[in-house]
Image 1 (cartoon, rainbow, N blue to C red):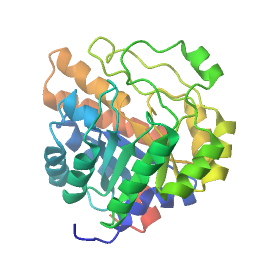
Image 2 (tube, one colour; image 1 turned 30 degrees about the vertical axis):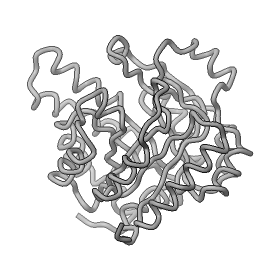
Image 3 (cartoon, rainbow, N blue to C red; image 1 turned 180 degrees about the vertical axis):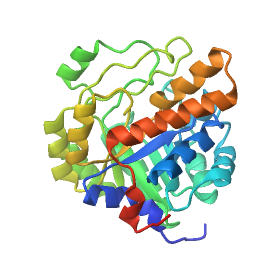
Image 4 (cartoon, rainbow, N blue to C red; image 1 turned 45 degrees about the vertical axis):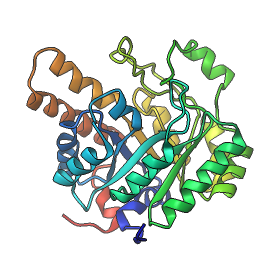
Length: 307
């Protein structure tokens, strides 16, 4: 693969971390959502990542990595956006092995700016080994890498334990000592950590349900920030209490993944008989609301970008 320099916009997460702010990463499970998301970003001159996870073209309608890349390039605002391959699991939510190396390689060849390898369902040593392999491969092509340590639950089949019980037990929470060893051993660029958030449900029977108003263990996050010294990522950002998000950003979260908060409004409009244009407008308004709530209007200036 031809090596390409890491572009300025790919550094936006590190720049956000250095400035105590956050980059939202919006998932695209349905192709018409792409233009609506990017329209809102242009309106607010806001940096963001556009991303797609494997489950969004296996269980929703994102279709493929290539189709998403083509749709992205129709609407992308080079000053504001970068393209990211979200969750590429080694073992997926159904417990099945995934051909992750082919998927990562395809994303790199298609020009994705960053990729995520998710070995969180593996033993620690295997997660380190596979993540390091992806880092070596991606960095040679100028592509940044995100990984996950700990377990952000929610995508698995079957019901979760009651949220309060889950939070109190710290089940799946990322261990700071393991995080330090993981980052040292892999040289990963960003690390997704588990500190109390949960993914939105994706099964047909539960995907329309409102998410739990999750909270975050900020003390755990502070220890993770100190032990890793790299930008940290919050998955399952939809539904988390806003006060917790504000504290998380102040303590190391530099990228926040948002899916349910924009997917459900889109699907609800169509389910009620509305048009795709109506659904797109709902997404645009949802993204605008999220930008304002996070207080990140005008973040293009962080990269020295001008309208």
